[in-house]
Length: 366
Ligand code: F6R
Image (tube, rainbow, N blue to C red; front, side, top):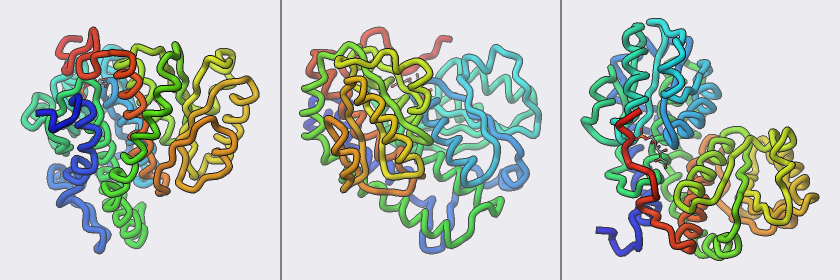
């Protein structure tokens, strides 16, 4: 049932061209520059007038929410707050019937996320669910929503569910933008045409696997690791760190690259690998100076770069090339080598990658 793969996690990593395609299917019309989201179409008026969106989730789904924040604010120009469901539910949050709450959950059964929804519903907010498991509790509690259609995820560490959540949020951002007129039709045609090609680019990105395995071998005995990125690559850094810690038990932290100098830089020495997401996007130059700061302190740099990059290649110990894309789609590609890196390191350390210690696939208790 692992389809020839050693672990479910690896199988699910390799399923991502298909799962992202399934999430897009029937929802984008690139030539017309149109996004269609059947699950929320009755709420078009709400979306036109909404003045705040609150995203609630836990763990990896919360990271997807952070990517969603960048996308929705950038394209739909609606203010977004992203909250840990467990914190939101206990701090008497300010919610009104004007708010839209988007709850993200692979399982659709996470106790804290459900409680956050119930609270927001009591206060009259509209609730959208972005879930993977069809008919689970969260979709049933929500007024409307979008299924991610990633298919069953067996590995405890979330991989294909994350990229499908990011895909669904990308669709949501463009859908809201389309309703509110914050994006032109020609821009939408451009973006949707590119989004349509993302599954193929994920396939290409998966070809980094052998190279990533070599890098994993060099760093498998590390005790700490930092992940740094800026913009929508910051949540990718958080996700890379979470993946590494949960399946390999290596202590890892993700930070916005610019925050490094406000503390974490003190940790950097020859034993500290630092993984940068350094693709050619708006913060490229800034990330390069962060890489130089790490190098100057003897840290080892592994960088995810855009195909053909030579500048970072000359500075980093290792680079992993991914196809060039618009900033909006970088998280969908940059996440892939980080999943592979954690996977290989965990296997090399003899860890149970599909069932890490102390973790459950669905956290139904608070
Ligand atoms: C990490 C992971 C967890 C879940 C979290 C939320 O790999 O899988 O952090 O993302 O427990 O679960 P869902 O998405 O089912 O609500």
